[in-house]
Length: 446
Ligand SMILES: Cc1cc2nc3c(=O)[nH]c(=O)nc-3n(C[C@H](O)[C@H](O)[C@H](O)COP(=O)(O)OP(=O)(O)OC[C@H]3O[C@@H](n4cnc5c(N)ncnc54)[C@H](O)[C@@H]3O)c2cc1C
Image (tube, rainbow, N blue to C red):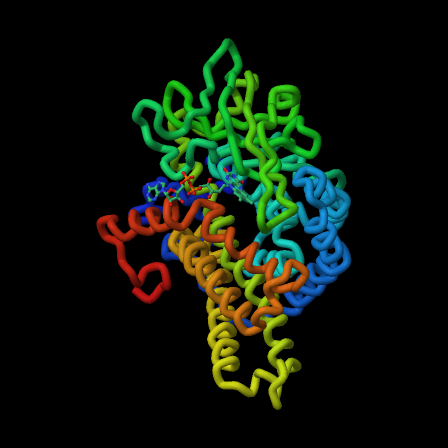
């Protein structure tokens, strides 16, 4: 297990059927995580980070979000993101997604949450398009050899261009049961050994940028596939993908309009044997673990949608009388909705901070908190945004009204990054059913 530290070790997360391979970094002692002062006040550095992220988002993403929504063709509108993507890379934001032990700047979950919320408030689809390395490189950090780490991470440490990574997990026939083993079940994409290469064939769907900017694939594609030894992960690089990807369909999403999501066929993608991550058959546990950081971040995406919708509904309530004698905030029914919404926004944001902190510090509570942030955050997000739409009333039911797009984005959060029903609640069930599971352990209150 290569994590750039001799003191890395493996922690057992009870009941985590995705495998207990949760890497604990060197600041974690045999007695537990080195205690840190708990404070929910932003440090001066975090205030600076927030200002920089907000400045970038308002300058680069606000108008882009409107232009993207106005473009009817899914491929054309996704390509509109590229100049801002290049600017974000040049400003060091992509490097900020790579963990510090691997040469990037990511070393704090709360910092990540602050930055993600500021960008997601303006354009969550931009963040999702850019955040491919968060998922696709996670197994590389976990089991990659030093040579693999160097080769696969390198493109994302650059400060120019628009490098892309895709986690090619989902398939058109279904993904929730990707580990099923019966005939015609589970992962269908195959990798067959041929001399010193794997030859990969199959169909993949949904993952952002499967086809890359130009149809020849992303810089790095981590492919979940079936080898003779079981479900395995193999990394294909752009040189292996070019000319071997057929786009069958560009999905036209109702929200997250700038995401380039497609259904593709991989045809005879020839990859060196040395691009297998870990061992054959290790793909199930590695895939599940890869989706923790992104799952934890869904609470932040939900908080961003709720915060924007709250701002719109609150201003409406303060200023609109709707033909009556007083602004509608004077009615208890309206104020109650705002009160409940505000409490839920704060709760989801704090939960997501906790989850990202646990995940990024590789704490054993990471999986459980990531799942709560994903499930509770996404479902609260839809409920709150929907309630806020009802405050605005019929005026909101217009494509041009700014609130409705937040509902369309929020609708995606329970079903992306592993649906709550098919994937995430089942993972919580596995935790609960594990011998020795202690409900107080994750919070540290055991
Ligand atoms: C913008 C966007 C970005 C995405 N990014 C990626 C990405 O980077 N990589 C990637 O691989 N995918 C990506 N996806 C796909 C996404 O992660 C999905 O969550 C994933 O494909 C799983 O979907 P699903 O759980 O609905 O699975 P499906 O297999 O399609 O299941 C459909 C439904 O059937 C039910 N179901 C199936 N099996 C069970 C079961 N055993 N128990 C209970 N219910 C069950 C559930 O209701 C489930 O929602 C993306 C999608 C979008 C829209």
